[in-house]
Image (cartoon, rainbow, N blue to C red; front, side, top):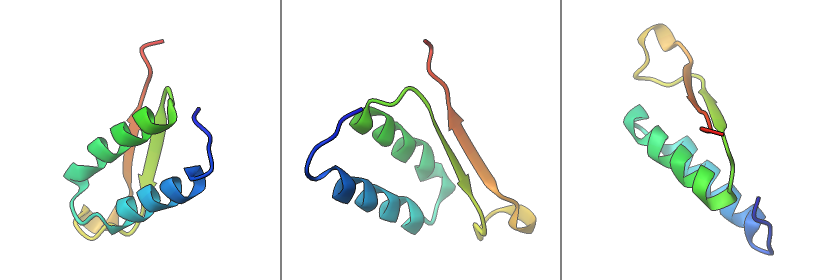
Length: 67
């Protein structure tokens, strides 16, 4: 995982961008960006109160490493 002086600010900015997304189709690209930026092997995202989801069901996106 990459660490540095701006890591917390960069991470917070990515989280704010994720929170501001209006289309769930954009989420996989953001998760891929987080994987690459921080050298992660997998990541999970659980979104609640997403307007476009039927009956306000949560949105779950998960990536898995081939390792």
